[in-house]
Length: 418
Image (cartoon, rainbow, N blue to C red):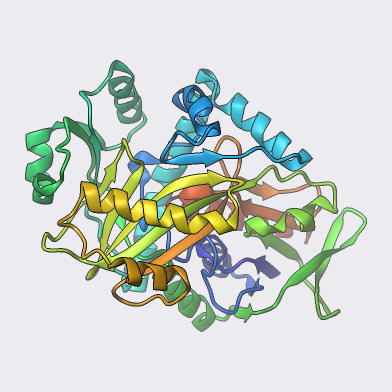
């Protein structure tokens, strides 16, 4: 079976891997000149199996007034007069309702736990040569845990998640560098099975593996349209005017809205911008990954560097993104001064202008997200066309489960037509 994968990020390459394992002849296409050039390039480096929570929650609904007047540090949003944003925004508001939020959180957790098992074998196969460490994660609480937090922990435990509430002293014993934080936590939530790594390094390693096993990787090749005969997919058309025939196509990129919309498929996903800094480690060597919950900032050690990531912006203008990167560094430097070697203002400005270096590297990128955080996966009304997209901030975390599921669906569909 000849299958094309559109998108060479963590989702596309993980999908290609499972397709190859199913015996497919796979071709992978991406308009960028390298793998993982988009949302996977320098994300938070988190495999958050225990904390796979959607952004749409009742607490988010309560924050919306502050967010819309730029009074929230972590999340900023602006209205845009477009049908696409209106559809996504209304869906997001509905997803924030308590029952809807609980349902999507449970579904995300189930995906994450299944993904953890599937990715474990893949990390072993790849040799984890991308600063991968199954080191555990601590989410630091500035206030004593509320009844809601305790109920959420219990619900996750009941669903099979290894997660526990720990005191400040227990958190400091698990991660001594917490003692160097300016604001010591009241308590923490500990997920011992969570991991960290460089998602782009993972993608590069996986690209090497699947090509060694016979897949063909085509970079710098933009898919311009889906070729269909009525409601049956026949292949792909490219911007150079050429076409290629395939038995099935899997869309694994959030930039494919136009491709599928032309065939009556409504992919309700929208870009949510995130930011990161990659800096040399400081005088304290972080082991566990940390989430500063109040600031919505995550810190993870990747080899000899610290990845600091956070913030979520919707419809945020490109010219204002540098100020968000500067603010991210200010928060991290103020709260965790010993965990990174922070750059001078000149070094940060140079990185923002595109001169990334080992002493300071910055990134901002759009993460395609569905209103409820659940990715769009599986077969579409177009026979032979499949989706695996819209993972938002949880792309790497959920990649194993969604990719294996889609690969199986492709195989079952093609075998049923033989």
